[in-house]
Length: 440
Image (cartoon, rainbow, N blue to C red; front, side, top):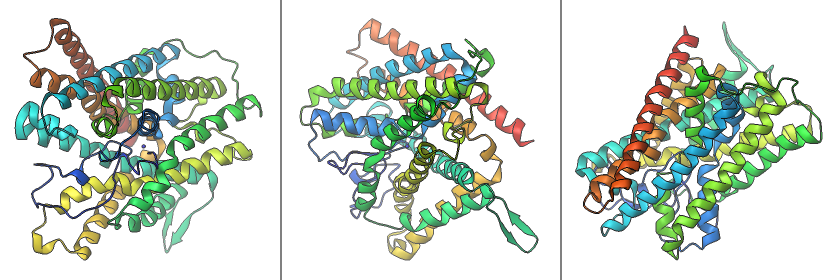
């Protein structure tokens, strides 16, 4: 999972204000507690220009998923890139549907608001749970990403305590958790918002380093032309490509932040098009360079002795450290509201947030995710992202505007829902089965 500093908006969080009511945000999500998907939230009170809206959208979409696009080509073959393009086009259309839902009634500003308007309190709760599930999964993925890349930089690192020896992967996962834990205690995250504002630039730097290593340093360029289509790997590829478009939870906030809201379709098209170019560029170049030896993150394939490789890896390492707190905060805020008013003290909040960090670390360490972090990303892209980005926007649109939709809109929405359900089912089953198979 970054955001424009001009908006101080983060796909994950913004400024903290004490909640005006103590009801759980699963029932009603306050302005500053709104869930965000895999990246950052854009503050709705900021008046953004077209360019700022595009930057926010690209920041939202260009997260950690870009690192796994070459691995997705390895799994699905070259023709699997068609899936990336199709998912991008459908993501644009479902983003427009979210806008139609927001415009249908006064007071709708967030994704859970749309869920409430479509399906009542149950809709709000279900959408909130799916969004928070994705946030928590992204936090786990950040720990895995940090461990993988730091282990590449320091492969011989280990810690021995008595008869217990921690290898580099486990050691760096624990160290990362200890580093990010204090950042989750902050009540005002505006300072982290500034740090994470360079996420789009970071994505450009990482992809540029990949091209530099391939074209200037002449690393890679395998002899094999690769596989045109690998059907057994398509479900994994679908999940990885789906993960790239996990920004719909924040699209309503981008829409609300625009000075001229009628520019939203163009803003959304531009940011999805730019992001898709980055995804495709990294996917094609990475697979051409490394072929069937492509790792789950292309940074793991880069020769460690090259300057461009070091820049790419360190850029990758610094991003999740700043994103973790921003990603975890909406979930933490919603859980804090469940505490009795007299228990909502700062020490209790610190304990709660620390427990969330520790729990994400335990989940990351409980199974050997480090050997197949790409499968974890595919699982997230297959289940919560397919619902948030494709299935739920169509379902909410049909429910809210059922008396105004045309027959071809109904057909298209039903088609997208069917495709989303199939991708979610096949991708989730394939990812889980491979994770279980590797675990045993």
